[in-house]
Image 1 (tube, rainbow, N blue to C red):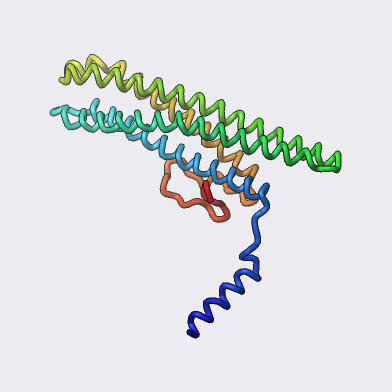
Image 2 (image 1 turned 30 degrees about the horizontal axis):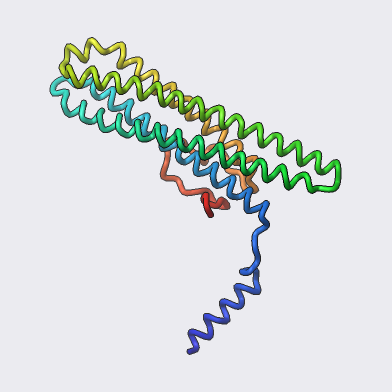
Length: 234
């Protein structure tokens, strides 16, 4: 009974100390926007890793000096991962675009209610800056999706060629296209990094607790969400 009574007291203390307070809708909306951007960057880091792994599989196949079957199987696995990631990135691009539109529209609507003309104008200018940043993110996402499409096409062509003619002479004859696929993968990684940088900058503009770029290594997908951030949906 004493334990139960103590639990009740703790519950009352939590309520009286702010447990029943509700977050301001505009602040909660901003936090969700930041959380979406953080999760987006985490996802982009994973995308870059998958592309990097596929490039490594291409190199391993090119450097194989005996049985090509194991290296080819490894490449097939990586190509499958790239295909899945390309589809997921396309969906993510649409999702981020929709979330950005919803956030920007709601923010602009709120800003219109500010009665002080100069303050309202300052808020509108800030909102316009955020809208421009989201437009850059959307444009970069389009580039990433296009680069993924080009890379998948190169990988699929190589797969078809080698699956029908898996031997060293054929591999040697495909050197040019293997090199082109490597270049295509590198171009894709460049666009992913550019998008990731813009996402990071925008999340810092919106966040009350900006995170230094050095704390976000795009090659490391195991990092926890930095302190002070909510996960998307939180």
